Amino acid sequence: MKKFCDEAHQESYISSPHAFLGGIRYGALIVFIAGIFFWVSLLGDLNVIIINPIIDSLILIISVVLIAVTISYFILEVMKYHETFDFLFPKRTSNNIIGTINPKNDIKNTVIFSAHHDSAFEFNTFYYLKRFGQIIINIGYLGVGIIFIAILLKLIFSFLSFKQPILFLVFGIIFIFFIPIILVYVFFQGQPVLGAFDNLSGVAILLGIAKYLSENKTNNKIFPKHTRVHLISFAGEESGLRGAKRYVKAHYDELVKNKTTVVNMDSIAKKDIIVILNKESGIGATHDPIVFEPLLDIAENLNLNTKLLALPFGATDGAVFSKRNIPTASIGGLNLKEELAPYYHTRNDTPAVIETEALNQFAKICFEYLKFIDNQN
Picture 1 (cartoon, rainbow, N blue to C red):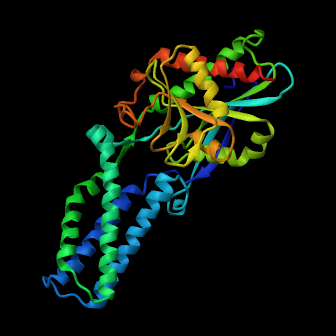
Picture 2 (cartoon, rainbow, N blue to C red):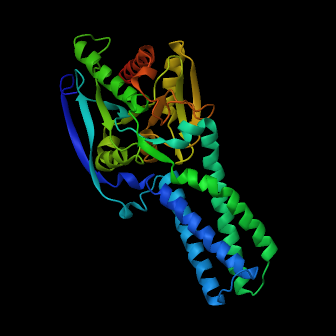
Picture 3 (cartoon, rainbow, N blue to C red):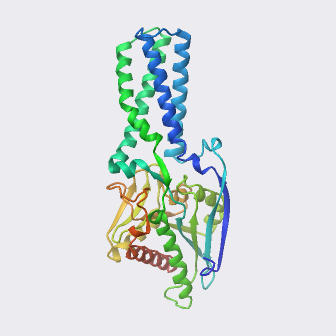
């Protein structure tokens, strides 16, 4: 970026990157322990063992608290990307990379093209179990909910001196069937993957934009007249959008003042697969039609196979901007609604899966969007 941009720098920030998914295995173990406590209480009801009523109530209370904490972690930290449990994990320093290209004339607005340079830890469930591994995640959520309800009911019944050993035996058997899924969660994450598709592909496009604009500074049809371009490679996307969060927090007033729009790129591999996100349901972000509609028109005018979709789970850095009402859209080649690419968060995410033409297609979309914005001045 220093080579091709007018200015480039790093911005450091501190976060707890392993808090985002690093607690999953601990949560699974906590659920397993709570299930054992449930069975200890159940065996007392069945007169298999002798257990003091006070101890019985105490272990059920502990179990309810343990699972409530686990559910809170999954909802707040994993699904909604809050940093509620970060204090339990070590702090790390990371760096966002920002390159700036100034227009020929006075600045009237700003466009950010962004991607992320950190890669994911391998999702073992996706690598070994493919699409079924994705289904197992949802089954696991259901299982935790059932176990939580069972323990809570048993605790309430114990306070009322109302025993239902057969009912809770059924719940106990259901828990046993969920044990293999609990083990899947314990071994959910593996080693870091290379991350060529997710998301050095996006970073490559940022560098391509910088190089192309640098080479065409005298071309009035290409180089922006009034639009400043920020090229941002975020850290910490795979650890819960930490880098984008820190950037938006530090630059929010500037983003609003400069009439900034954002095109975020994430996960590009195959040509003729253009996915434009209009919302990211899991995190509760809705992207701005001011951005995604022109992108959709541009892609269709380039005769590209384009789909406007909602992201069913997970999130992109673009969601951080949209949640703060900065006009944004995320684009990429990942269609989680209809398929699970074999290189998504697995060791198969290598440079071999990236098609050069795919990068070219997304770069063209970015250049046309920049031209569209600049012509509005």
